[in-house]
Figure 1 (cartoon, chains in turn purple, red):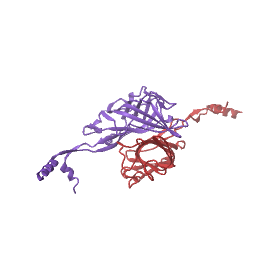
Figure 2 (spheres, chains in turn blue, red):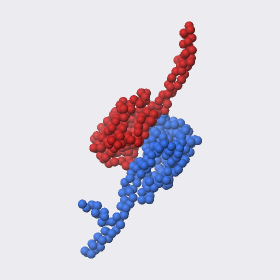
Figure 3 (cartoon, chains in turn brown, purple):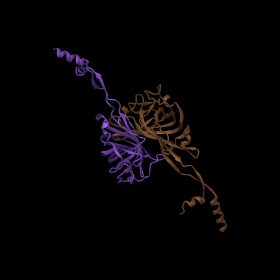
Figure 4 (cartoon, one colour):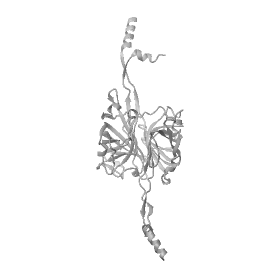
Amino acid sequence: MTRRLLRLALTAALVVVPVSAFAQTGTVIDWGPDCYAWETGYNPVTHISAPGSQMSIVGIVNQFVGPLGSINPNTPGTEYTFYISGFTTAAGTAISAGGTLSVYTTNYSGGTITIWQNSPRNAAFGTNPPNGTVPSTFTDGTLFLSGTIPSLKVAVTRFNSNGNWLSGNADSGDPPNGTWTGGSALESVSAGGHPCPWRLTGGWDMKPSDVLAGYTTQFDGKIDLNCPTAATSSTWGAIKSQYRD
Amino acid sequence: MRMRNHFVLMALAVAMMLPAHARADQFLADFRGFDYEDPNNTPGFGNVGDGYNSLGFVTEVNPALLTADFSNNEYTYQFKDLTALATDSAPPYLFVFYSNGRFRIFEDPKTSGTAADYGVNPPNATAPPTFTDGTLMLGGAVSNFVLTLDLTNNNGSFNGDITFDEGTQQGSIPPAQLNGWTFAGLTSGGGTGTPTGYTHQVDGEIRVPGATPAYGTSWGKVKNLYRH
């Protein structure tokens, strides 16, 4: 019995244990007012997106945080722009009606994103996209990051009395399901050699006076990284020693 | 008579500045932070009597309206004094209507100031204090604040009006643009990095009415505006 215990203790002391924990979470890419979405099947009178409607988004990054925090996207002469495309709503918009307010919910799937570093700063939204500068001036330069976003839920609160926009948000879902697939910064958003999952969220502004002609939304959003700390090898002995005085 | 002719000529020639049609709203500031309830009298979020608070960083301003040096200063914001007065619902969504409150932006030097620190379980020793130190750059009264909450995932959004009435840079905003408003998306759960004790990650903007530009015209055209 004693020999068995000794053998077990010896094995435990030698075994290599991978240690992993989710740590580096939070915003890595942020943008403000310079981001607009448009849609192929949106009715501005009923505020309904028809089944099959496709949504696209272009924007300009205004801040990098965390593992990308050493990059200043506002450096004169340089811009970081992005293009989100492919989002399609299968069911269209559903309405949850309340007494004075209602929420218009639209679920999209099948999105992709590319983020570009470019000099000089030439991104121009224009009107009625796609147009001569959209998406072309948002997809020129060097590919910084690319990825896929399986889903996006947009919830917009409107007044029952007149249909006016009150507030809104967009979210790709929890747990984060975005996947990075390429780009020069891929390593910076990876851990242990694997790209970290991420989440697309933010405020969804459909107030007509805030939205450029031909667009449907001004999207003040960001990308949050849900990154596991890289696994490190250790022994049971080393782990146990962390709990000793 | 000669004087009258002179007046007519002047009237025909003079260039007047008339306001054009109001333009689109203007961006004022971009912010990102976290929210929490204090007081939180009832378990859960958005119950009547609970107080809504949000702290975070201002990440961009409109340089035409505010002066900011992000290289040398830290810019933080605070929503406070908002008390939930009533609720309504449109399942699975909950609407929370709040009392009037206050919004403020602070400027704090990075070298001599104190770096903002969320800490945990606010209010605590560093939050709000490290978000409300430095110079009060701009502040205003918040009204008509309404928060929508999706009870299936605890995400949501808010909207409110802001009348700017304080701060060192209040004067840099034209009087006609002092009645602004705010909106934000609220996110909870994985990836948001929400510190313990905070509820949502908050990402939104402050906006103000668009400037009303003037354009040149003649007295004759002005007078025509008043004829049938």
